[in-house]
Amino acid sequence: MVCDKCFKSSFWKQTKKTAKNGRQIWKCRCKHEQAVDFVSVDIEPPNVLVFDIEQSKALMRLYDTGKQYVSWKSIEKGKYVTGWAAKWLFDNKMMSMFVTPKEAKKRDERRVVKGIHSLLNKADVVIAHNGDGFDLKELAPRFVKYGLQPCNRYTTVDTLKKSRQIFRIPSHSLAYLLKYFGLENQKMKRGDTDAAEDGDAKALKEDEKYCRQDVAGLEELYLLMRPHMKTHPSLSYYLDMFQPLSKGDKRCPRCLEAISVFKWTKQYRTPAGIVYESCNCPSCGAVIRGQKKGSAVTMADLADMMLEN
Image (cartoon, rainbow, N blue to C red; front, side):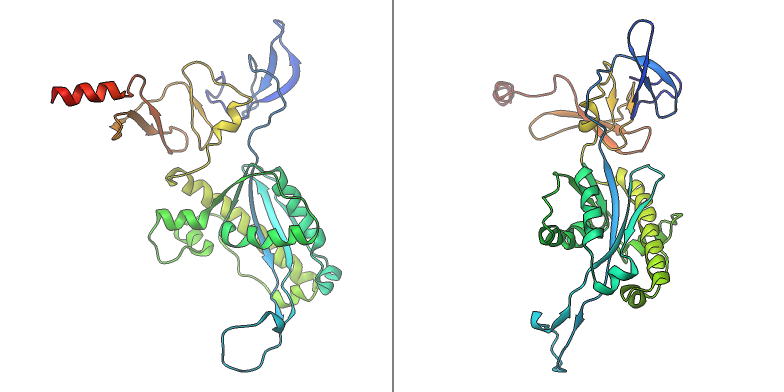
């Protein structure tokens, strides 16, 4: 269903109002209200979480042997999660949780880990820079350690992996990517991490501010890269379950905008003989493709073509 005011359709919210004909009144994200035929169910749009964690250093006692290998027996105090910052995609509210000075001195991360576990449990898609290789792997053993249940299944989008797939540039670090693309939320210079780990209140506040800035920049980077990603979770699957499209409409699997008319600009045929139509989403620019009706070639068709040749 397309909004009568903004001519788009994404994230309709049900109101308690009812039209004279008994149809439910829904509100578009542009705040326009109209009566639509959507069925009221309890399934919500996809929850897309953007997050980042910060960690302390590990303390070790070593002999000066010149070897790079460090035995686990040399670890005096292991590293711990000092805090995290996160936000739901497109939401203005930034969330964060860091250890208190008292918790930092005890290296007590339990409360902080439980906080991010609660958020991950609500997420359908999780976005992080090097999330698959660092953040989520660092959190996993802590969830087990503190007796937390496995999170509900979610899909990850690792912007570090995606950057390596798409770009050939000198560095794929978050700081360089934000600077290279000239995004608004640049990476900050980190403060005194040693003081923060030791429980200095001012240093912990600076570290929290640093982490929140990283998440703000990461959201910008993700939205910039998203149309260019060759693979991406189809978010339209979640939305279509509770907000069906009108006949003839198409929904972008990336930005979820429902467009009444798609101007297909390109066609191509697969080796199996199936014809696909593609175009750029008028809203976010992502490449969208759809199978052309009646384009599938059956085995009988292939046999006939071979006989003709």
